[in-house]
Length: 476
Image 1 (cartoon, one colour):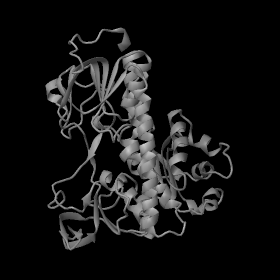
Image 2 (image 1 turned 180 degrees about the vertical axis):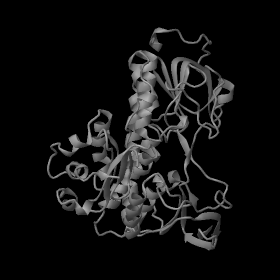
Image 3 (image 1 turned 90 degrees about the vertical axis):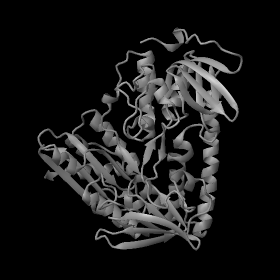
Image 4 (image 1 turned 60 degrees about the horizontal axis):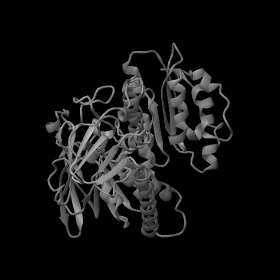
């Protein structure tokens, strides 16, 4: 593969400040895009980083995603300071706002200080496969690039529920994070990661929380026994969970929002809150990009169609991060960067098909993390299995959870009975979001269940749980 800096740019003339010709244009300041922009600039490429909002320098994660939500979760967990819940929340929200402002500035400086990078704040639209028209108010700039990377992320999805868009009390996760006032009564619509994280966090700050999940249970991707434990933890923490709930309408009445819904039997019910969080999924942000003018295809959900090298239907245009419809994780976006960088400057061997054992984490308290298959998924493969399911409170050789006063949760391992291959591990426990990385690394490098069972771990630590967990495997 050739380096962009070694090849001529498109020969579209530059007209003073209204045109800009670059080697690489990145649309969206997300993790993969900003890392690629910085790396290519340090290699001598001329780079344009285009971001539609100066409030989003650095991307979703640091501004409206991972960083602010996890900062609030941390303060919710460690906020036993005697302050009332609303005051604790306000202080936590202000601290979170200061943190995101700091990180946003550092991310801007990371690129703005590089001589060959031009950071442009405005909305980009394709005029043709190599040309982006960037507008900001009455100002317009044409950016012509040899290579383009679309990194525009995803937006909260609002389905066509009567009153959902019209209610003044319905917010998305982005809007709720921007507030410093804690809701007194929060109704959460959804049963996935975002819904559960916000429900648990606001309950910990003292809000009355009702979660309405349409499915028969929350966290539908997990095994029933794990979900049962998670549901018990959330309920004990003060979250009222209603499953099988089909929302039929939302109306603002007397200073509150009244959510009407039907239960599994079809009977009408209501839930009332001063705030309603719509956590009903996210759609790739492709509207307004003019992808059709560039000959770039999208799928039925609006995600940019890419191959294993993350190339779109235009081979010089790549789509990375949430916009390509893949897993919506910051660390996957970072790996997207590695794939594209290798294709642009390396041997082009790295692809998305190389990914194995990518872990996920849900930051309830304690956190829920998983890598690999659930038991249900493993059974569907027809392989002979061994399974271990252990309540954290029953693991006498793992005192760390009791030391930190949180022995709640469950751990589960699924193993191929013939090969001893680890097929999946789920951890709902203290430090699960950290400990799961040990399992993911082991799975990627072929470490067996027996080797995990007999490994030497520090004491007292949560990784010691693997001695116990893998020693309790039984035929399933």
